[in-house]
Image 1 (cartoon, rainbow, N blue to C red):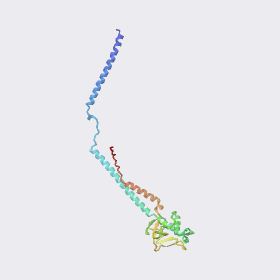
Image 2: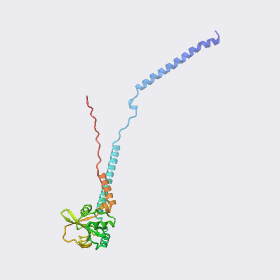
Image 3: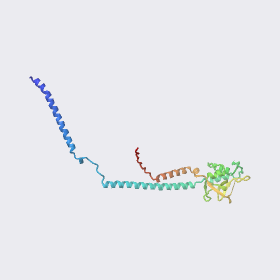
Image 4: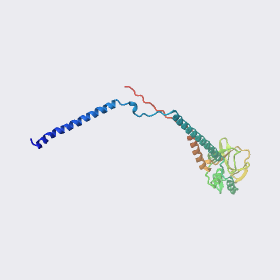
Length: 251
């Protein structure tokens, strides 16, 4: 057999030998890895370490400090809002029209004759006169005495100021309206045959009223509402939601 024939005959044998060696090495490695996995120490894998008592104490202290600061901030806010509400209520309670301006206008129409249903300088009835005078300072009153009484904010005689309104009463009904001039005096349109004049109230049963704060100082009334809403929000206790567990009914 020639040299070329011998080489051709041995090639398949060499290839087979190489493949057999590779297969043997792969099997040995697989067995070795399996054994290593079986004999591995479980404790060798990393596990999370529990927090130390010092760490736990530090976290608790931080949370407590934060809660204390939040409570102190809330308390300061409550004090500030309460003070602002008190000041705003005081300003609203003591809001009055410009009395001197009202009386100056009222006096300008002294001597105008009384006229039933009248609301002009050609003739006034009582509520027509008060309505006309207040309209001159930009305030619209209802037309008749009883409606004017309902519209006003009731005040005591002690708190009445010049420029407020005075109502003569019969039971709970206001039958006459006038403008308070101070010192027990009023400007009014009295009755048929008389003229607008300034007189003493006398011993009549009267109720005093002033223009409502919602008309005089609407911005303060709105501000008060905002302050009270804010105070309610700050003092409201948070509601903790309780999770409801579903109960599965067996059929």
